[in-house]
Length: 171
Image (cartoon, rainbow, N blue to C red; front, top):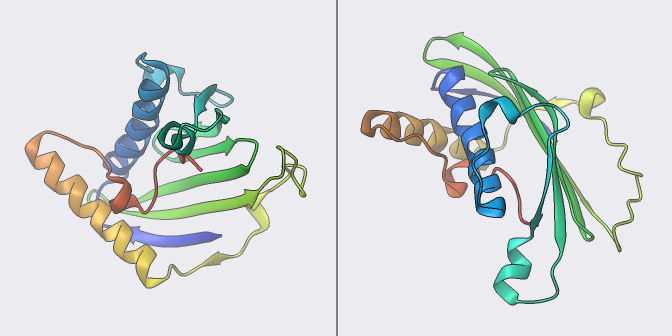
């Protein structure tokens, strides 16, 4: 699904927060810092899904891959494990210095033993852009409020609850 929504924060601030969450997830997975210069199309890393960590079941390794990355305009990544395939993306356009428009994209597919019914060929370019539902609007509004609040305190991060999901999902 694709949504178009106006967010009351700058394009740069929103993008810094989202890319920062990607780097934090990499750090939690690898124990190493990810420099902004390393965030390029095709960058890939593996991680254990959080569900497996918390239940101590057999490890389910997920592959996270940047499909597109153009700071501060375009961000799109995929997350694939044996049981789940997800694409999350956003295209951000500045309206004013303190407001931007986001086209947010989300695609989910359950897999069986890593096998996809669509052969991982999802292309959201032809998908109709919809108006966000009330919950999605509230999530983006809360995200903008958190960005402003954290900017004043010198911290800029995105909470999973504010964004509606982890920047990099764990299934």
